Image 1 (cartoon, rainbow, N blue to C red):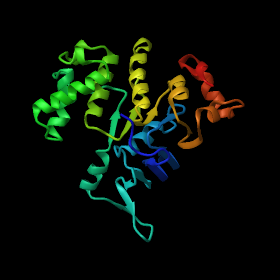
Image 2: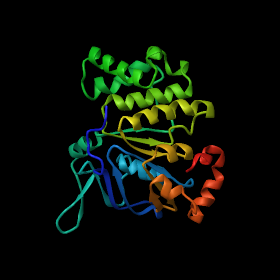
Image 3: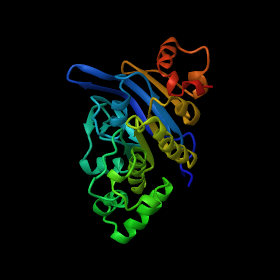
Image 4: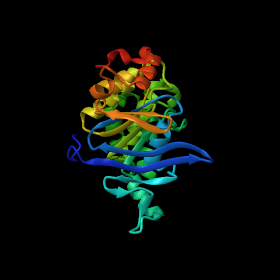
Length: 269
């Protein structure tokens, strides 16, 4: 089903975001627009702040300064007329966060629950959906990721790629308007990476708003609507794949890509 939001509208808007851990500044004055119904890919070297930025978008980390809006609603903090940043009530934060689903590097599935039960659990406990209805919704999501036949298998009986697809189905079950992916294939063997990327390609084709942190450069180049290259906590480059990856390239990006030629960079336009 296509995303109902109009192209060009910001699903996530970030202004002046910085993040410090003790005295270490991880993110520096980030401004970013994530367009609704599009795929924004965050790339860059390890330690550049990609995952921290993604976690700030989900409010799993609180930015030291700056503001984030999700579909026009402030996330975590707002600013009064005098420009003073103030924390929002927890109920407001939860309401905005409910629009966001997230998948991590590790699958974080409950080992004692089947794939279906893993997908259904939040529906039953958070949304208070009756069991039969939750299971029906859960099966729809497992079908979407191609795992309906594995619904009653436990995580230990699934491959890494299958476990990650269950984790995606679990996030989708709560009907988020935005999906965030933090290096979803980094824990997988190369032969299992493709099945997860296919699910993500299908979501993109359906118009899901996605922000993806990934070293899969070929995926970013072919599926991403916007490429954001971070270096040392700053956005160094952003734009369409053709504008960012097209030659001649920025020297720092060229240096970075030289490291990842074996991870799909040969597919670049």
